Length: 370
Image 1 (cartoon, rainbow, N blue to C red):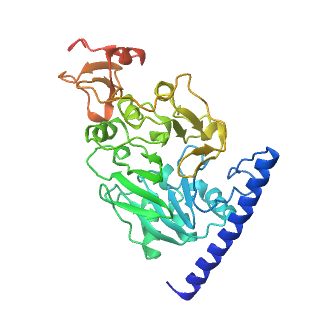
Image 2 (image 1 turned 30 degrees about the vertical axis):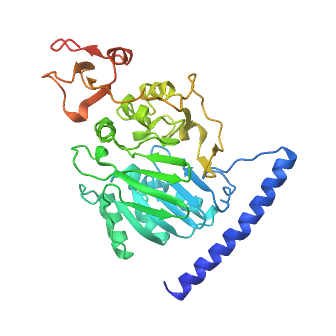
């Protein structure tokens, strides 16, 4: 670390400590007066709240039909995905509003434009210690620009292995999936958890139901307090099997208003309601900030509560069934898992029961007659 960088870090820590004291005094005032406040959206004119020491703030930025999430704790900051190409100024201005002038890590879950679009601009303008991404990916201009910029900045992107971990501030990040075994690029998304004391946040990029099912069958601990919905709330992600293993009391959906994909799909919203999750949506609420003190999690927005109670102790209720029903997303037929007419993995949708498949509008296959 050179002398200038050392001085910048010292100034940043002093700035953070002063703001933490101001924040604590202001919070005490609010408690005495019975008032409360919310943090600003990146599209707003005022700066977002400053994070006091010992907390974690997860900012799900409103970047339209794209993903960009910022995690801040103590003097550390990590970004997961970087929106579309046109989101660079929005993201950079948001970082400036928080006085964030460096990043401990940037994680690109997969190389599609709506997740890495502004990545090159972020690396060009914000000093970054480490870049994590799936490096075994098809070439595209936006991907090449990102890799070239990383190389110019002296950064060699790291393709993590399953269960690789690193700490930032008082948080621990673990990669649960990092492979390249699937035909669909979405399914090869890096999947990771961030743990802050008793609280856990889960991110799956655009991974679909095939990797979701594999994670459940692999016996990994998936339960999370906040789950960023897979693939912007697509019905082809966020399967019942997976959601019942994650059992999230809170779900955040990052998507654009009136997007052409129809995200979030009603089928996915129904599954979130079934597990009793409160839903937060960037398309209707703007940027969403979840704050963890290590025990409790609060949001700066009023979420959409489920009409069903969230059950903490499932007692095996959400275990993967011995056999499942498999839908074909193209034909809208469903099959037994032994049917010879099963679709390709990328076209499958998994159901826990026959009634569940029927409720989703699928018809029984005439060959296996499920």
